[in-house]
Amino acid sequence: MKLITFTVPCYNSQAYMDKCIHSLLPAGNEAEIILVDDGSTDDTGAIADRYAAEYPDIIRVIHQENGGHGEGVNQGIRNAVGTYFKVVDSDDWLDGEALQKLMELLREAVKMETPLDLILCNYVYEHTADNTQKFMRYRKVMPMGRPFTWDELGKLNAGQFITMHCVVYRTDVLRRTGLELPKHTFYVDNIFVYQPLPAVKTLYYLDVDLYRYFIGRADQSVTEENMIKRIDQHIRVVKILADSHDLDTIKRSNKRLANYLTHYLSIMMMITTIFLWISGTPEHLQKADDLWAWLKDNHPATYRRLRYWSANLFFLLPGRPGRWICVRIYYILQKIFKFN
Image (cartoon, rainbow, N blue to C red; front, side, top):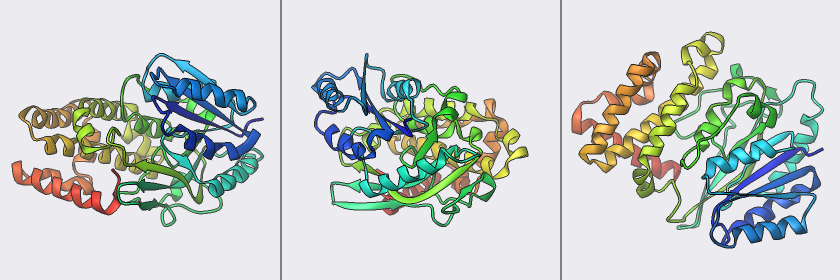
């Protein structure tokens, strides 16, 4: 039995994929590693095949036409045999000691009468430009060392929310929700995290710094330049998130979960709006207005929740001064949390 499947979407990753793969191998034969070669034009596919030949009991390779990061994740979900599932980007890596503690927990988890639907670990921003780290932890908002439910989740701050880097889903949860990420679209990791959450009944916070998130390549999707260049894809993702769940219906049965989903969607709306404002072109300013108008027309209750959510009150400030204040707040938070 495989305790976990690590899926590694790879596109032209020859320069850095070795570090990622070597960080996963210590999980041993209780894990499988699926390397998805997403139509690479360099030696990524050949490197992946060499690893599969060397570690046939652990590593599998899927070669596909280019479909983007989301289709790489989809392939992993379709083909995974592990009880649990984690995505690791090919330029990131896992901490060895933390990985061993995760594997220990998974050995216990598969014996539990009530399964753990979602395991959360800490992650670390690894900034290569200045050789600094930013640790993202959940010690004050989640119970530690035992299973818990949404009712026990504390209030997360503006820079502290559940991301792809911290989650280990039970594979069956992802499949039961029918999760299918769109092709050729950046930022779909937000859909991967957000959409299955209402299906999660039991959570567990493992307080280890597991995931190392590399920040420093100019071509990364989270740079300001690329966020603005790909803003239409960000808008598409936000709309998919908003269409995913009726927050008022969820609130009637699970207030804490509804509040967290609102928190997440609020952050996504803010980020998208801020980058449209940073660009400042007439076209992008209109797209910001159109996005909020779309939300109001299609999800009026969600619009009201987000528009008057405490973190969004400064969106009510009128005109150019309001936009200027909002952007300044974003840059302050960016310096504090160093998220790109």
